[in-house]
Image 1 (cartoon, rainbow, N blue to C red):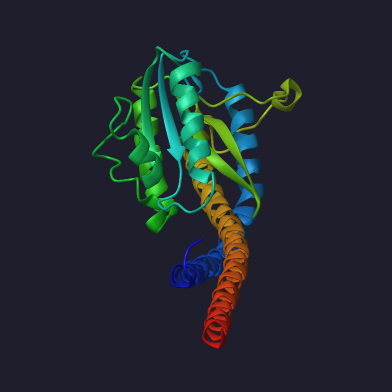
Image 2: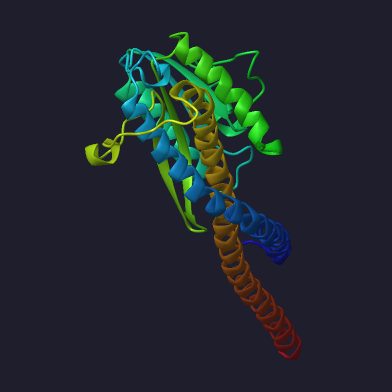
Length: 290
């Protein structure tokens, strides 16, 4: 059994750790509210714009919409979105595993490139041949230190240029979709080429284009693609704080349980030491009287 000093030091150490996890939980809870409001307000607009984009793409031919060209999947670009920091449970590991499945199983043998949004996924793949660096979009690993629509726009514009230049045949986005503070769902969405509507009925109809098809394609499609990736980044940002708040809440509860058990062990050890001292005193007194 450890001595009293060792137990006392462990109790103090657990107490210090508990203060840190509790503070991190409160910080994440404060940031979560703002991030959650931002993504929930954006979702209806992003969903409707994506629906319009799909319907528009279904009415255009390839000469009018190069972003709907289906050239197969021999060249695939994957955009993986994680956080810059850890201590958020399986949040980052789930994305890294999903990207690994895409690279090693679903698109094994294909020409793959990976753009990392977030330092955690960069740390996992920066030594691989798939890690993609581009002076026009770098650096994007620390994008969550200043997550703005303007920075996402620069990235998407470079991706669209690469797609039209046939550097990529398919562009996928892997991220955590925010459901609530305790639940995040890993999503794999296709950014390019633009998919047709899931229902053929939604694509039917005779559209009147104002001011014209070309103007709509040049304005609407880039805006919709930028917003789609920006929404994914916002979703991931909110999910990160939800995952960290939940993880730190559990860590704080575990620290409390451990501290309680250590105090119980400390009291038992202290009582045993006191009992031994009493026995020694009584034994010494009896020896003197004998």
